Length: 614
Image (tube, rainbow, N blue to C red; front, side):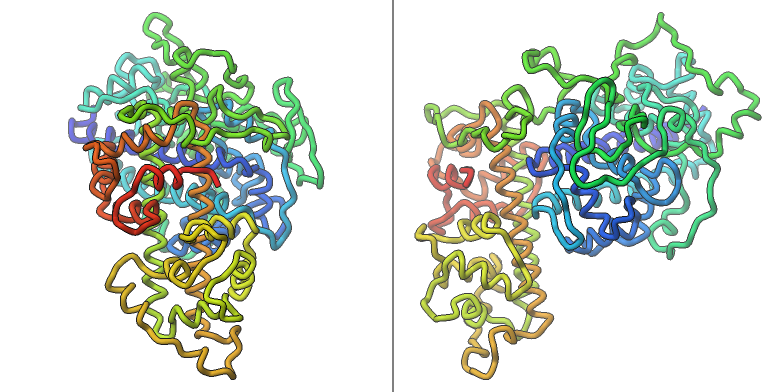
């Protein structure tokens, strides 16, 4: 048996797997709740070469297109390999679905699959919010693999650890498998009280055949390092030796026949249902789209020679001691599982759905006339002052504020980077938009100015950014509003930028297309793209809050205004976030976002307006 120290290290690995999988699952749901998101269109967007597959370079190029620069080809290679069932070093559409579809919300999963697809050309992009959230999903998967790989190496480096002893330490009643009951007992014995969601996340990530239990083979594969992580992150990619095809648990229930999607919509039957928008041929089984796609290693061959054959190919069910959780199919989501019924009570299905309630019975119907659904404005039906949000709605509010804060910090970094360019000044930039020197710009002029930086935003996307910064509400941006788009919140950088004199407007031989150095123009382009992306994401968050059945702006305002001051400041935002385990010193960014009068205080009217769906 492993020592106490080794058992604690094993616990640390399992808890990290649970936390990482739950975080990734949350991102899958967040992506899936974007109403314009459709998986095949996303697959087309990444598959620029139209090969019918996505490889590591396709994913890396997609990340670079959205200004995610830290990830390497090695990172995307190992991300791709984890989901590569047939080990051909590329993802077909079915394998891509295992990466992007949520696992523990069957209703949302089915809704995503049923959405009508739309054609994405070789040079087309998805809406900015979708591209950003899809990139975040890839980045979170990469970070998860890096963290888990390090913990695996630390665990296997222990002299008293081997996979069988670790398996036996958890399988205390000799079931010959790990289920929710014995996993929970093991974690409790090592000092960690796990929730059902955490247990489900561990099983889901490591379970290869979707039976909601872990065999010895699956446990070995889940705890075995790929290779020294230094090689994973830094080595130049070379073609690896082909490994034996050991994913028999999966290949027995899934055909490898994948066809490239034609124009229009094909149909195929899955479990008696006709689904639209998939590239999977009709005869292909999709029984295990939901389980973790990590392959079994050659360890299976070693097991046949083991002195302990009782652990090999045995899945005995001991009914006397079987935990009721062991038979719950929702932990290993089955694609045949029907969507949650609209008339089911929330209490009866509390374990089966996400705590995020955007797709409960109050969600819009899944039809082509989706736009006909009119979400409720969170500022409507204002209750009596003093009422606060229910706990679930408060968590949604905190999640939204946390995401907004992270995006504002990202935006601030781009603003600081631009302000440090020696040839950049706001006067010359404003002239590029206000070409006839009126002193203000309209929405059409703003879009025309974006074209100068090769940014072709839609009317809707440009309007979101325009509305964020206009203060007079007359459909125009004056010079002061325009400066706010580009000026850092940090006073040191902002003050030096605002007093910087113009240069190009005094030299008429310069065309406006020749203003600034190429590097500076690129920095302006990056900042504008980030601004557009942030506002698109913020609009999606507002839409999400408006769909919550019991959410309204006054209760949200009261929840933050703990001292009943009648206004919100950075300290109150900070207290609310810290109460939910979110620690950030830049909460004044949230005040700046809502505060139209720039007095350092957010009134209810300003707060409600910031939550209003434009």
